[in-house]
Image 1 (cartoon, rainbow, N blue to C red):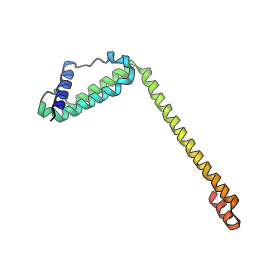
Image 2: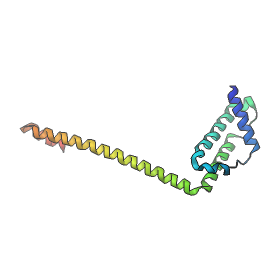
Image 3: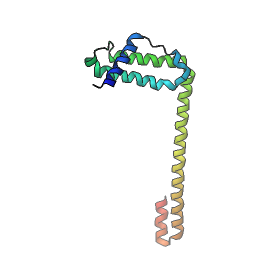
Image 4: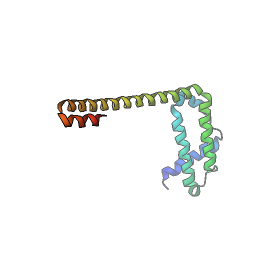
Length: 138
């Protein structure tokens, strides 16, 4: 048990005991940029709760209650900024579809180059080789 971990455990425990319902309103200034950090903070708190509860003895909440508090914090963000959440979701969908489109274009170019090379070979080939290469191209 490291002293840094113990201090984190005590600090998080004190914050969670002192603030049964964390106020997310001041964090809305940063829009959704802090949401992943908040979720990570809660998840780390859950891990600390499970690891150091016996050794430090300060946690008054179970991991399931901490998960509910995390869900409550996320809900507050989604409830108070629905348009940002929707915009972020559709921006992500758009970015993924554009990336997929670029991958497909690259594959199409690659296959077109392969076909062009095969056509060049067919044109250079003679008799039996030409028939075999045409059959392979199909």
